[in-house]
Image (tube, rainbow, N blue to C red; front, top):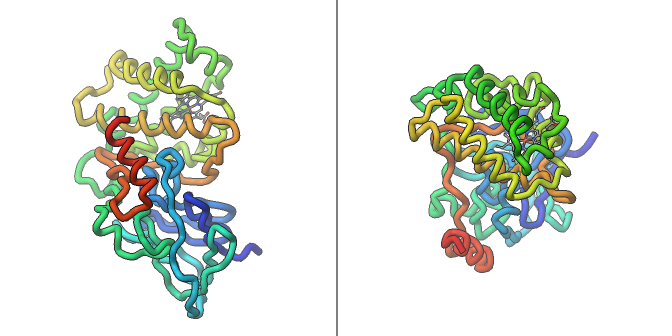
Length: 313
Ligand code: HEM
């Protein structure tokens, strides 16, 4: 049996291996086996899981903490993201640095989740000053889900059917070659994914292979930024054509997801990139977490890169 461990990856997520109980930010428990990656930079839109944002933002997260100390660590290993705060890690689980060397055992430890601690991997309270916030779980929002507002499954299938019909049957020099020969059920599957993401039933996870299947479908396709932009703009146009609700709130939620998800799809499709293999289907509500913003006390190089991005340069 594999000894449960959390390994810090260089300028990347926590790599969790072995049988561990990981709780989602809404309290849902996930019993993991194999290798999972948890966000360490604070910028993932699929928290607590990594979505490769660290790489897209050029985040750096050097370890600076003392590795000493010795407390017994016993019991079933568990990782719980505390609301707007660090991971609470309990039980018999080894913590390893990016160099593979262990940190001393501790019965309970708090690992940085906002990306700003000056004592990484441990939390030093920086999340409070950086304004780190978890998104509100959709079911706690006192409003209908985006899924319900959009018109549920029927509306999403109407959308994706018209979208892929258009790509295959109208001249589309950028996208037609990508989707030529696609599985005829593809539109329905994408509708199921969108439905689950926007707070509808978890059909994609239950019947279509979940996150892992979606990631496999994009891997190695070497999509281009031009194709991504066409995909997003064409889908937005189709939403008008099939008369999806167009009030500003629902369209901003819908389009913000397309912008985010398509960038992740583009990244995952590049040959040779390290893809996050396991995660649940993301949840997208009316408003999501603030972006990862470098703080003055972070690594100066990373902060400079982040500021450059904000200026649009
Ligand atoms: C928010 C963005 C996106 C989402 C949610 C998404 C979702 C999905 C899903 C769920 C699948 C698997 C379908 C199945 O289970 O059969 C898939 C496959 C695929 N996606 Fe995406 N996708 C996105 C962006 C893109 C973009 C930007 C492109 C290309 C420009 C693309 C190209 C493909 C292709 C070629 C397949 C395989 C189709 C087949 O052969 O059946 N995706 N996508």
